Length: 394
Image (cartoon, rainbow, N blue to C red; front, side, top):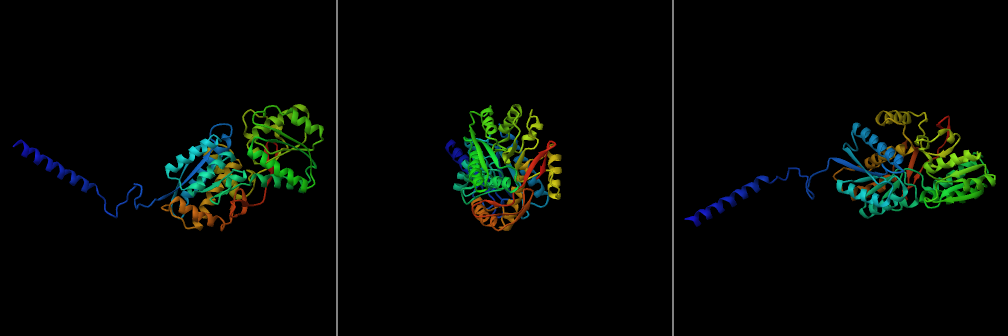
């Protein structure tokens, strides 16, 4: 009797379990979020990577804010091809290894396209990963040649060689100086890349490099030796293809020495006016190549500056503008390719590679910008000069 009751209990339990499993089943019309299902994604996922802590945080935060502002506007205007956009930004502290970790985190999140990274070293590390995954990547500000060395990668800014070449041409075309000293960071990809191309083009332009002085990341606190050599050589201008932190020390030391040449920098100089505890009067007269100025009078720039200030309580720099433009470039290319968010990241990338070479973009950082298959933008350079503590277009 006991055995019969036990047998009946087992049969009943099995029947209940089968009923429960049947009740959990979904018809072919139901949506499912599980991997490998036939559900359709309803949002595009655009990731971002850059330093929001550490020495280069001013760049990364600007890029993060520029991305977020563009995504907000795009979503309010109806999205991309009618689909909303989600964005997620990961900190890499301007470190290549941490940038790769950030990329993997974003892949786990479901990223379909990447806006980043912000600085060149991490960008070179991440572009190898995006290439292997066939993930579309556009960097707002990664300037080294290898930042876009593969066919899946594009950039919003000028490359290091382009910045060096264009700087020499601009100085010569505007007769700013003929005797020039260069102070550069030989241990930094960004700085040494610009320097090499500047030096080559300076000779073509008839400019005399009277001093070419290097420093490294371990010897970037006292620039008296480099400045003295520039002064003794009769330099009328000192070209600084470096970041603003080191430039602030050079400007302070030159003032202390009574050395007052013209100073000319590139996009890494942007941010010097917002640097904590820096006497901005030392930067008076400093010139730099930059694709963006908050003082531009066009409506798009003024709206962007006002919206940025309202959202984040500060004035945007060129990195914010580059990032903002980069997201709108993604929108333009995605609409050119008629993308939908249910496509795989690889299929999206294949379509974007072609679409990027077909669009022409008018933005904050340039007009009639186009891209080649090499990922490089074609646009006119803009130079600004610091006057009365503000940037003025030259």
